[in-house]
Structures are given as C-alpha cells and as structure tokens.
Length: 184
Image (tube, rainbow, N blue to C red):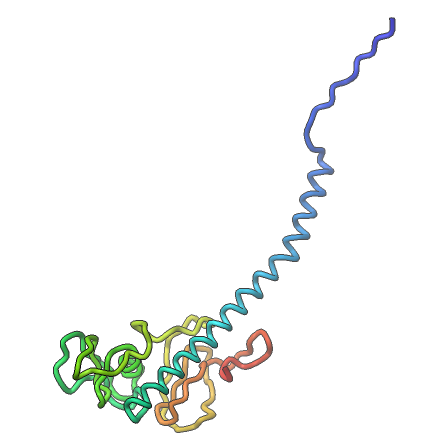
C-alpha cells in the first residue's frame, strides 16, 4: 500500500508579499502627500484673500458712515459709555481695531454697548482684526502717506494707510501662483 503524507502548509503571507504591499503603499503615499500640502497652501491663500476683502469692506463702510477712515481719530469716547470704552489713540492699531470691532459715535469714539450715543458698527464681528493666515500675524503697520500703491515692507500681518484708507497684506513674498501677497 502506497501512502504519502502531504505536508501541511502554514497559512499567512510570505516576506515577498509583505514587501510588495509596503512598496505599493509607499508609492501611493508619495503621490498623495504632496496633494494635501498644496491644498493647505490653497486654503491659506483663499483665507488671506477673504480676510483682506472683509477688512476693506469694513473700512469702506466706516468711511461712509463717519466721513473719514478708521484710525484717523481717537477711539476714546468723548461721552459716557455704558460698557467698555475704546482705548486707541489716533493713528494706532488699537484705534483701528476699536473703531472696526466696537460700536462708535459720529466722532469715532467707541463703546462695547450700542445705544443712541453709539449707533454705528461694529464693522467686524470679532474682538480683534483677523490675522494673516500665511504669516499668522495680526500686526497692523499704520502709515499716513496717502499712497494708493503703499508697498509691503516685511513678511508680517497688514499695512494700513489712514489717509488713503488702503489696507494691504504686509508681505512681498510670492504665493503659489507667483503673485506677491501684497497685491491681493
């Protein structure tokens, strides 16, 4: 009688099969990861455009209601304020922030509580001005040159001209399309 015993084969993956799967995953990762990196940059650039557009709209509306651009006059109210009064001196980032984020009177004095004395604003619905998502800076360099072509001078937050009412991205670096951020 002929008898043969078949050797039992253990189930599982061989080393070669595991290496092939690892190589395929590495190739897929090399293709997909750069896609996510550019998506992040695109999102930051879109947020930057939205932030600067929103601030320009707020500045224009303030001028329509007050006859001058925010930051020109002091944000310290001349009369009584039932809430928190603005503290920004004329020509400072604090005055710009107070006048865009708080209620204001005709002279530019600001208060955190609306009323008949403070009927205007707020123009931006945040406590502070938005930050530049590329540099993560909310610093506003205030100038009063009246130049509509105000140049960027650092990689920072914003640059604002109180005479021209122009706010730009204070960053001359180039975006993913080769355009200077300051031209947004």
